[in-house]
Image 1: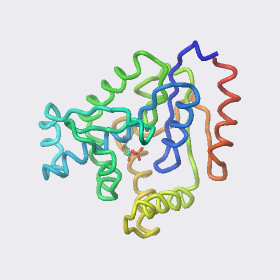
Image 2: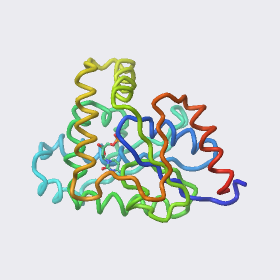
Image 3: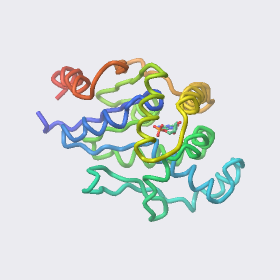
Length: 225
Ligand code: DC
């Protein structure tokens, strides 16, 4: 059954567990997992460090100097994102990066560059890719498309616990505001807005464990592989 390599596209709202789900699914199938949000975050981090995050044209001009890659870390069991050769996996999850990433990801030239990179990464198939436009723009022909959603309050609580565990000082109210604001920006931006592909299957995981989500997806995979 694992001989047939397919592309699995996972899109949906921020902080609804897309990466956790995608990573578990990729491990189950022996597929590569690609977190495309990390790529937009890495470009955002670059722009913040250069002090150009508020100047879209300066970000566009800097694009040739930005190199993004993933390298597998056996310790964490996941591919981590590198910005010009530096591991930035931790830094890109900071809340100040989260607050700016929607703006940077709405710059058309940024999207063109990252989408091309994502398509190259999926060329060999056997990938689970998560993001906002994977089933609609990056791989419109993906064999399996899943659109994930969860209650905004539940999503904020999940991210809050994650950040607390990492020792970040944040308030639940701020996180919920950030989650709702990113939903709004992701859904209303002019280029590749977040929307469900017509052929995507919806997964609302507000009250589901990761195991329950795996059982659910197994049912779909049985028909495909
Ligand atoms: O999945 P995430 O929350 O780490 O994504 C960070 C941001 O990147 C998100 O607010 C929207 C943007 N993004 C995007 O525009 N397209 C993607 N394919 C993935 C993420």
